[in-house]
Length: 319
Ligand SMILES: Nc1ncnc2c1ncn2[C@@H]1O[C@H](COP(=O)(O)OP(=O)(O)O)[C@@H](O)[C@H]1O
Ligand SMILES: [Mg+2]
Image (tube, rainbow, N blue to C red; front, side, top):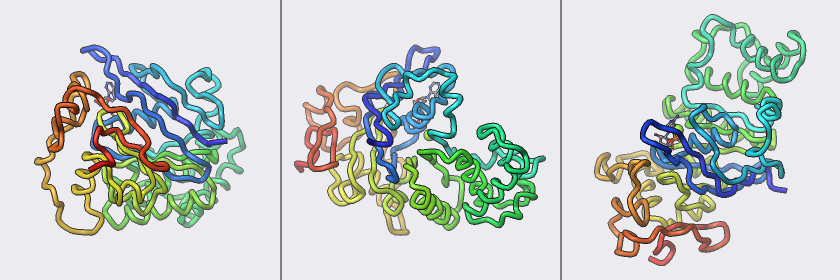
């Protein structure tokens, strides 16, 4: 059985200007032990997808359709109470800047232990022991449990947040831009750590980023999102070597894998559409140099082109 199957997920937000469909008919899946990268510019629906899967949407948000099958159980249809019981055991999220949510006046070990007490129902002493073990799992000395957050570097704080996310042995860990605020070297260390943990613990992992270049080393498969939809998905090789969507091409050009200058300077690329006022036809056509009349009028469906490789471009895979 697949670990996770997201089918035709639609997630909306109530806004003062009406309903905004942040995730629009998104489907993907994840095998046990597999790592999927979710990439796209800011505002394309990555975080909303993650919050939908973890059932952590804010009150103005709602899942308007689709299924989220976790080992066959549809999380969309599970009661709030059941979700509370399962929370952090099914899906744990490490957010961007999560490290800033550590309580500055409480020892880090105690904060991890509190999460363990809350979710696992074990005693204080046992929880502290587990907190120490979790810190070792994220490659920090267990003795660090007695330290305060200000005694930690940014990277160490993010490791502590990863330890906290692992407290209930989740089946899936989602990193939502978990390294965005960190410098390049620390970023690489955290990504290596996530990769190691996924292998050791056999979890599924979804790594969310706006920077496509970090996914090649970290993930098995990639899904590229644009304006609430997946526009291209496939193995790392499919996406990097057989790139079939013009948006993916632009992302690759913006975030070259090797160190060096961007091939497309900021600004030339333009911006994603307003989600309340989407263009007709392909959502990417106003920014696409290859757009034709067909693209301006008919919205492409996502279609399989080979193996796991799928694309939603009228011309994808054929040019
Ligand atoms: N709480 C909210 N209320 C209204 N709109 C929201 C809310 N959260 C996100 N959105 C909108 O949903 C879209 C997707 O946002 P998000 O999932 O955060 O994108 P990403 O994580 O890819 O940057 C954006 O247009 C954003 O403005
Ligand atoms: Mg986000």
